[in-house]
Length: 54
Image 1 (tube, rainbow, N blue to C red):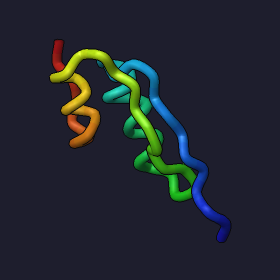
Image 2 (image 1 turned 120 degrees about the vertical axis):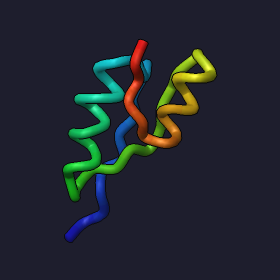
Image 3 (image 1 turned 120 degrees about the horizontal axis):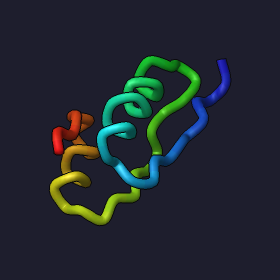
């Protein structure tokens, strides 16, 4: 098997923390390489992989 593709998420709101994060974690050929988020609390959620409830 080849190396996983690293993907990044720009903006880690409700859609990214739910749908996009789940898509990345369910795949074996993709890993989350970067997240760009300017809100500190949301960025912390991105680091832990938790859902956002705004």
